[in-house]
Image 1 (cartoon, rainbow, N blue to C red):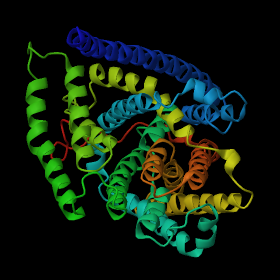
Image 2: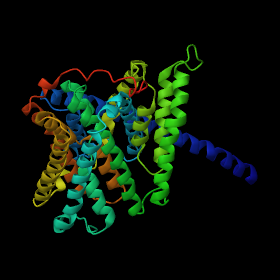
Image 3: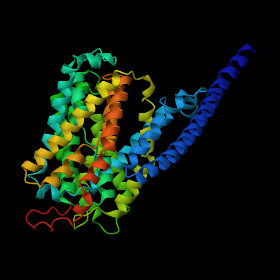
Length: 449
């Protein structure tokens, strides 16, 4: 009898545990669905309001994320923030935000016209390197000059190489997604300054993620734990493989009529997610792989993106992207800042603007762009936003920076991005809405973009 009772308990316990896990999972799913509904709805309303004010939509979305965090909602009694976003729900929202980033950055890369990069190869590299190196030097130098101020925001490890390099990266980032949104809304995507700024920003992002990977290696927090030289070699090999092997296969496959896998969208999603997985495995961020996948995916024969691919992926990323802003906002606590923290915030804003706008303008002028076109390039390159937030989140999660400095840098990204619209209006960008240059000659055209 005792044996039968024991067997009954042993058989019944797994069933009970499974039932409890199912109830727990159902609760998490319910919370996630409710959270996404609140996030998307509030972000849409805030984004539309800021668009009416002439600001990028993402400014409103990020402010909505901050409002749902400890800076506003979390300050009310009753724990509304924890009620909306319980601890067990946040990892699922994190995954959702990363998927949104993959889709969105893939669309940005796919929309980029690489023929214009070939056409302006004498301009773009100079602008990109200048607008990346100068802010990085300013950011790194600020650590030594303002060491006491950084220590004042709880950064006790300011002398480490990882922190110095990270601050350089934080000031050198340019947001390709936000810039793409701005140039589309302003109607300057096909103009010389618009193309120069977008292609330069793409190069800056690539350099930025490589530098950020170096930061992680220096901080001994990289998941790969491999030497930086090996990581760089593997990345170079992967890029070569995508260009020399994957892209020709995709061109041949997508060009087939009546193929079994004729739907192009799933193929694009597989390529984007697979590329993101590879770069994440190499120790870089997933969006680097997603952006690369968008670049290598073949275009139509005239070099333009296939709208059957672009629109669904772009819309999927845009709808879920507010989840990332909320995840970022949950770590922003403006109320925790002290009065002397505002001085560091002001200095970083000045350095960020001077480094990006100044270097971008000077480099564009050196490459024979007009004063007005060079001004547009400099202003656009000063846009941060989404890409900056990704880098800051990486630094926060890795322990390279701490919450107060994270909050200061997020606010810096907000201010510099919000300044883009007014500055563009000041230099009358509407007058730049002219057609793109004439099609390239056959000897230098890239048919697949």
